[in-house]
Structures are given as structure tokens and as C-alpha cells.
View 1 (cartoon, helix red, strand yellow):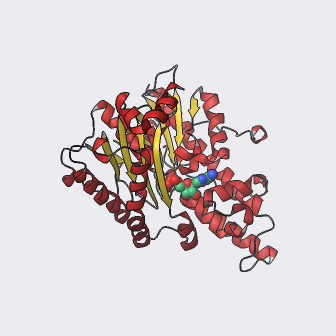
View 2 (cartoon, rainbow, N blue to C red):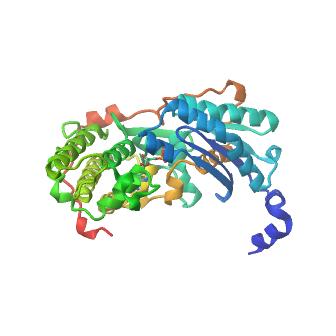
View 3 (tube, rainbow, N blue to C red):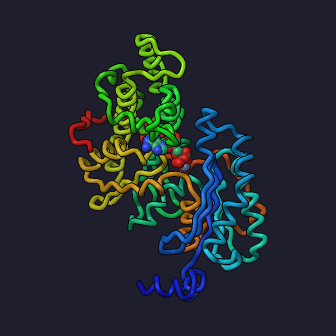
Length: 406
Ligand code: KG4
Ligand code: ZN
């Protein structure tokens, strides 16, 4: 209340200086969102702006790198300037400028980095904080929840699928990752093939959101048996989604033929197909996660009595997936923590907060911003995948209880 009154009297900028809170600007352009935000050290978002290319991506059927670059170039100035203006904090008074530099689409990353470098030059002594996109996804939860290190993070997005132990702000250990495509990409392809954008109820939604939406009314058991078990011979925590995608494409083709669907027409049993695809994604995620939890136990990678799984990334907005993973967490006595959906997807906030985390511990500040370059491919941290494979862990079948779903 007092903060609110002072805010009104003094304006956000002076209040922050009086209370001596740190402020960091974050810039995100790794894929198809141009995002900027300013956060303080308590996790308060002081300002944020985003320009999403989602509608263009849906129309084109995917992100086309030169088009994404052009749209970033057209929007970055407006997005960043509006963020700074709305925070009322002059750029020279910021305590840090953070920008995603890895991993991501090279042409997109470069737009953000070039702009951030120019801003750092203008702001003179403001530290520059290069950010790893996936590390940023992993830490956003700490803006809203007191999740202490170490914890397990499960990142499900349009570009990635990975499991990692987060030991510290910059200390990550990779336990599993996708060997082909990402779950978000699979959701998007299935949504496109089911022509969900033609349904008014899916208007403006991402592919993943629309599949989740229609799957709610479907019966997964009508088709789920058509999906063969994925990677059952590989005793590791890696993932694969391309088989599931192909199975779904074939299923849709056969069903369309059977029902005489042509052109823009939509299958009468679209909900059952979406539900079966979604259940098969859930089963796969669960199986691999199950092995990961056993591996963590065997190797004492997390404290026995205080174990947390953080689920984040765009696909973690999916409430079916959250509930499936929640059931396994209950069984293994893990606390499942999911950031609110607006913090799961790509935005400037996650980048600003990652910069803030680095600044607070004095790590990851670039000594010369001009020497910082993009890294389109970059692991979240050292890999333990070989060790997981060598452990050769067999896990019992865990049955998802669909009757408990809300
Ligand atoms: O993390 P994100 O915003 O961007 C990347 O870093 O990729 O994730 C975007 C992905 C898209 O593929 C989108 O379809 C998917 O997240 N997504 C969902 C849901 N909401 C967004 N997938 C499944 N269910 C959802 N509710
Ligand atoms: Zn992302």
C-alpha cells in the first residue's frame, strides 16, 4: 500500500532509486517473438511489450527465417522504446541490459544482439548480460516462487524438449533431450493437418492451444492404440516426437478418406484424433521422466526430502500435460511447480529476469559487448546422457489415471 502511494507521488523511476532496487531490461528475438521487458530484483515486471509473429507463423505453416528477421527488424525499435518509456527509467539508469544470444534462429538472434549492443553503447556504463534462452525459461519460475537450487527442470517448447538439473544460475546438467523434433512443433503440425484454424473456437490460438482445446471433448482411447511405444528400446531420458507425428498424419489421412473429407473440411471425429495424439505425447513424456527420476535417486542428484520439478516452456501451458506430469510427481514425492502460462512462453520478461539473476550473483556479465556473438546451437550445460544410458534403468509401467483430470 505504502509502495503504491509513493509510486503515485514520485513515479516508478524515483521510487525504485530511493528503494535501491535493481532493474534489468531484457530483449528476446530468438525465434518469432520480439519481446522486451524491465524487471526489478523482487521479480516485479515494471514494463513489457511484445510483438508476436504467431499469426504469420500459422499462415505460413512455420517460421521462415528471413521473414522472421524482417519482422524483428520492423518491430524491435518500437517494442524496446515503448518498454523503456513505460517504465519511466532512463536507459542509463538501468543496472543491466540482457539479450538472448543462444540458442535460436541465427537471423533472428542477430537482430536482438545488434540492437542490444547499440543500446549498451548509448547507455555507457550499463553492464551487458548475454542470455541462454533455455536457461532463461528454466529460471523464470523464481520470479514468482521460492524455488531453491538445485531443482529438476523439464522444458517443453516449440524448439526444445529437455530435462536438466539446475544447480545454480549458470550451472546446468543435461539429463535428456529430443533426438529429433520438439513437442511444440509436433503439436503445431498436427493442428495444421487437422485444419483447426478453420474452427472459430480456435481463432488466434497457437497450434498447441487449439489441439488441447479440441482434445478436451475427445475420447483418446478411440485411436491411442494406433500409436506404437516410442523409443522403448532406449534406456535413457531422450525424447522423440517425429514417429508420433507421422502416425497422426497417417491416421488423419485414413480418417479423411473414410469420411470423404476434402479441402477445408474438418473430420467429424477431430476431437478423438487430437485426444489420442495428446495422450501419446503425455505417455512418452511420462516414461522418459520416470527414468530420469529414478536416475536422480540412484545418483543423489537432488536432496531426498525437498525435491522440485519445474515444468516450463510454451507446451507447459497445456493443462493435460501438467496433470499427467503432476500424477508422476505425486507418486515420486516431487513438488511440481509450473510458472503461470504467460511466463512459460517466450517474452522479454524471462530474459530480463535471467539477466537479473546473473547480476545479483555477479556472473555472466560480458566484459566487452562488442565481442559477444550469437550461438544458434548451444547445450544448456554439460551432458549426463551417456551416464543415464550406462545406468540401463528399466522402469515399471505407470498408468495415467484419466478419471482424475479436470
Ligand atoms: O516456449 P515457446 O513460447 O517458444 C519456443 O521457445 O519455442 O513455445 C511455443 C510452442 C508452440 O509450438 C505452441 O504451439 C506451443 O508452445 N504451445 C502449446 C500450448 N500453448 C503453446 N502446446 C501445447 N499446448 C498448449 N496449450
Ligand atoms: Zn522458448
